[in-house]
Length: 336
Image 1 (cartoon, rainbow, N blue to C red):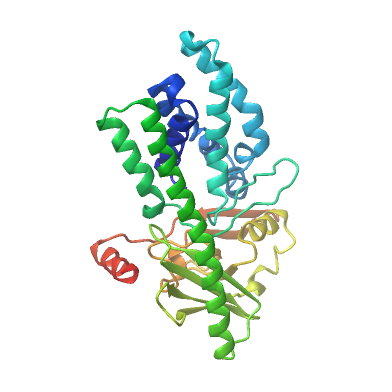
Image 2: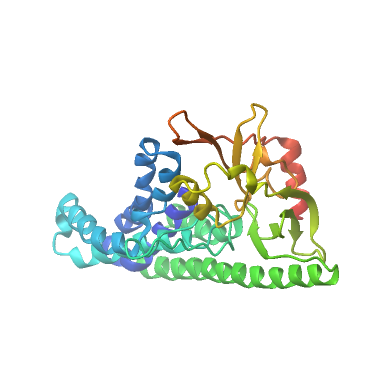
């Protein structure tokens, strides 16, 4: 999820866990601690493009990191707030739950979270909620505004915090149910139209859970389209050929295999205007790449080239996305 969402979850969690003991310190530090897992972005620029993909939401997004880092954070906070020196246990609870809230929520996005690192390289991604979702954030935001502008007793604040967290949790459950129901409808649609396929991938677009990117893989490529919650059919707009034959000269390179692993096989290859081979990961939905856009609008794409020494050179390329009034209006109409 985005940093603001993590901050709100952490703040509300801090209020629930220790608001009556630590006061506003629990809310403020809960917000800060909930974002500590994303310190990996500091290191990313110094890594190769492929290693960078796996380092983000990697070691710092694991259960082991939470368990090892939480007592250090708690100890630091007792030093900063000397009056709470005897409340290490309270700070520990705030630290570990806020850290865990971050990695737990990230598992429901499309990127993938190495929650079991270092025991497993498996990256968990349930693909059921966008990086930003307004309805998930709304109860948390309202609760925080209440805490800021309305003075109430600690017990009342705790009840409001629990209510806000419960509503967001219920919405998260809805996104799981919504995804299961949607994929069932997609399968029915494909069956009714006698469309043969190997796999289906669905991912919600940003801000909402009511418009989804649908990728359907067959032997030669991927159908890409949109599905809205009120629709009965998948609105296919594009068909992307896999063109995996373009990887013949570097298909056995470790870096390429890792790139394929990150994409979970939902990728296609093509040549850009310079004749370079480009690797397009089709899994991540965005405003532009929603099944109607071109490949150069895909969130993750990399150019691939073999150097004179036989080394595979991989470079990340920025998507040619355009966020303007017309695109936002079109997107709004899809949601409504």
